[in-house]
Length: 93
Image 1 (cartoon, helix red, strand yellow):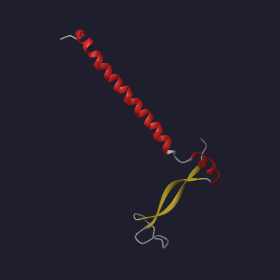
Image 2: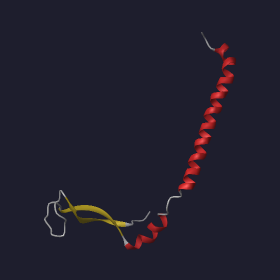
Image 3: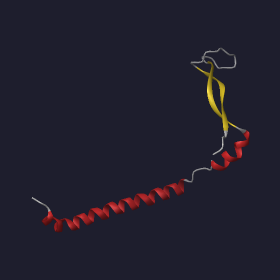
Image 4: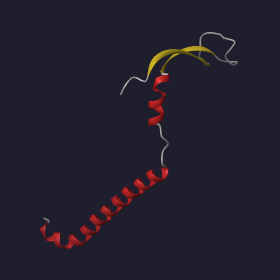
């Protein structure tokens, strides 16, 4: 995947900041932080990959696999209940 931005030093207003500035709200000061800033040229790539989540499809897939798991568990349990009388004679007492 190509680099979509660069790491830059940004100034934010934060309660634990160290530099007084009139642009910051009361009780906050400027504080330098490193941030990954996206380039304008990568906007097309980001927009194409950030499609919204289809919750109906996600629920359908989750529900399908939940039912499959439940059916396999109950099938194995019932097979064990049916086969248990026949396997008793092979167990050592």
